[in-house]
Amino acid sequence: MNRLPPGWRLELFDTIDSTNAEASRRARDNEGAGLVVVSSSQTAGRGRSGRSWSTAGSDLAMSMLLRPGMPPAEAAKVAFVAALAVYDFASRFLPVAEQLAIKWPNDVMIGSSKLSGILAEASGSHSGTVEWLVVGIGVNLRPAERPEATNPIDLFTVSGIELAVEDAARGLLQEFDNWYRLWLSQGFAPIRDAWRARTRDLGRLVMARLPNETIVGEARDLAEDGALILTLRGGGERRISAGDIFPFEPEQKLSCC
Image (cartoon, rainbow, N blue to C red; front, side, top):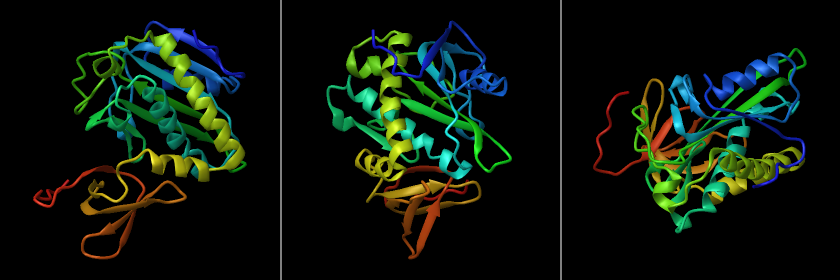
């Protein structure tokens, strides 16, 4: 079994409302950084934009409590750190690594199917830095019914390897620890470069579904603040800070969101 990196402590639950909720409760009770809450069953798991993320005994749900002492805008970049960790963890088991890619901002995909989801939540402080930061990661480990998910995939289906939840948590935590320490010591630049090397988005025509509109453009770069920079088909440039993106084929018709 993988040893935990220094400074981390694992707490395992058979079932829980949400690993992010438990880590947040513990943060408010002054729990120190390094707590990792793990469960294979969540009754109220959440993803980005308020979406549900069910975990019914077949997957990994894991939330880490951090206290990085940085402004909220910087702390939000931890989602890219987490995506790199999932990518590198999953690459250990895939027979064809080229299938693996990160879709902006932090979905790890196998082909066109989604393997994982990431949700970062923080509490501010009066000093202008976050008081605490919780990073939740969900990884599909085995085949299961996932009615809320669009085109999901799991590690067992593509690799034939059945991972125990605790083993998966320990392995993923090793990868996260590597990237997290690099981020703290060298900033976002090496994280940004590694994300660029692991995405299929850049250089492709994509459709971005935003809260009030849908736009199409070529994904040109990842900005220093984590926004996706698009060169629009009609000319000009657009920075996308929140929304969903999809590959766009010229024959597709745009529909209003």
